[in-house]
Length: 191
Image (cartoon, rainbow, N blue to C red; front, side, top):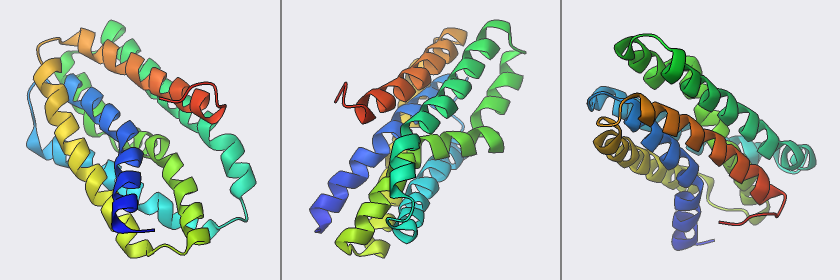
């Protein structure tokens, strides 16, 4: 597998994290560069680490992982999405909600795992194809980091003006991404 193929895989793997980054940017009152970097770092790091884990798991757990990964992603994304909607409707003061939702360790880890589960399966594939693991995971991590940074900025440009409705929209998008992942894995929808 060459550089171009790995680059395309990197972009494909980054798309869910990019969409979630847009949602995170929409929840920001104003663009906070530190938070934008932290968000992009979480997603880039997890997208890079998951193929490594998959590579070393190899085919041992492939059957179990491919049967459950999409359901796990749906549950995690739906829980975060529902929580975002609930906080927008019934939530605390916006500045308090803003700081909690954006870089809360637990929330970010759950989102990063949910959006990088497919990278675990790619890592399993890498093991079978004997792909240069260091090059692959570096490229996956860097592409995801860059796209997520841009996603936060894009989301902030549009979401800052929309306030709580942007947070509701972001929660709905997270739930829809989870549903799309399940439909893709069940071969019902391919977008």
